[in-house]
Amino acid sequence: MDMLKYVVRRLFFLFFLMIGISLVVFLISHAVPSDPVVANLSQRNLDNEEMVAAFKEKWGLDQPLYKQYLIYLKGLLQGDLGISIRTQRNVIDDLKLYFPATIELSLFGIVFAVIFGMLFGVISAIKRNTVVDQILRGVSVFGVSVPSFWLALILLYIFYLVLGIVPGPGRISTHLAAPMAVTGFYTIDALIMGDWPLFWDAVRHLLLPGACLGMFTMGLITRTTRSSLLEVLSMDYIRTARSKGLREKAVIVGHALGNALIPVITVIGVGFGNLLGGMVLVETIFAWPGIGQYAFQAAKMLDFPAIVGVALLISLNYVVLNLIVDVLYGALDPRVRYR
Amino acid sequence: MIRRLIKQNRLFAIGLTLCAIWLIIAVIAPYVVPYDPLYQDLTARFSSPSAEHWFGTDALGRDIFSRVMTGSRISIGAGLLTIVFAAAVGVIYGGISGYAGGLIDELMMRGSELVQSFPTIILAMVICAALGPSLYNALIAMVVVWWPNYARVMRSMVIQVKSNEYVEASKSLGASRFRIFFKEILPNSIGSIVVLGTVDFGNAILLFAGLSYLGLGSPPPTPEWGLMVSEGSDYFQHWWMASFPGLGILTMSMGANFIGDGVRDFLDPKLRKEL
Image (cartoon, rainbow over all chains, first blue to last red):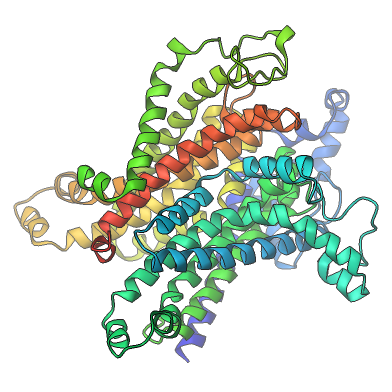
């Protein structure tokens, strides 16, 4: 019951958070020197006063600021995010179009990060203060230190240009047609169509960008897994387990790991949020038609409706993810009480 | 403390060395680099690394070695300035919030959570794009997205410190709120802020490089690492153009993260005995 109350309260807070976020982005994008008129009209049209006035009227830029926001908010509450200045389409349609590509890639990235992060973390803790531990800690620091855009270039150079074992940028090879959009995930859609070559092609296109994207989170997970497992291993009940003659493997897998992985869940939540942000850089390099590229183009053109839409979508994801993490945390650790 | 850390933690020592090297390079670079980082030698475009140009040359025949070395100044500067300003904003904000308590505290903390729930790079990108790309605007954007962590830490420190008896004593002696804040609370909280800053430095450099890569930092021809990687990505087959500036970002942020990890482990008493 406590949990339900907690979730309802968090969702209530989420509503105000969304309004706050729309207000912040709205203010930043309107109270600054840059002018969307200059960014979107050609010089010839700029000299034409009628054109400028028409442009302003069309996008509501001639209204006072608070009125512009109220108009926007009214639309927002009805699920209307406005029309993108750049693409001239409904922002909500744009988001629907680009978001599946981003989610597919980031899921791939998080799976990569979780598998390798936990594996490295556990090995590192078991072999603490050996050469293996030092190397793996080095790998984890490499993960959180390497600029994803640079790693992407290097990996593309080695594995695509020199070795030729993975395909280049994009979601599928150019000679293949995209699968029918059912879920928008190319891998799943290809499976639904029963097209194995297409599925395999889509998976191969996910490898490099997924690894680049997951690298940072992998570093975080390695570090957290290691320190958390080390902490658990120093507990009394582990000593008891050891002293009753259990093998080290049984102690770690059966007694320690379950408790050690609870804090890791939090990191996965935070990491997934980070991942969605890191999209901008990775998608730009891999020509991935997702929300990150869309956001970057929108920011360059000062396309306010699109920017607010992206910010809302990603923050919503972030907050919901953290809510799920908190609930999971409570379910797995009976000591946690909701306030 | 530092000496004990170096002895016990080899990675911390590596981090310290890396950072020290970059710091020295940043200081002496303008006096010792072989070429002017902006000098264009159009006859030597796209030279691969050689004795003459250690890291090769770029599309305009500029010496990449000289540019990478000089670029360290901007990266270190941007990282430091971001941390210092973000910490200053966070200390003031978190200080007021924790000291005031009650409704003000609640509202201020919700406000900082609002900023924190934005994806960092997207918020920074929006601010940069709105203000127009330049080094200073990139720094402003970085500080805007960076301070909430410091505010949170500062607030919890203030709440912890203000219940101590010596603060009570100072208050009963008639000290003003300002005096109590600067004389009692700040000195007792600053340690945590410094630690957070150390742990954070590598991330700040990464974010700055990312913004610069997206073309939101200084405009060309400034020798900025992120920008140089982006220029290099247009000439994919000339691998040295993007590789070396990227190595600069990597080694500097790895150095900072090794130091940060060492400090974190050292301060965590549960892990200390494992070291």
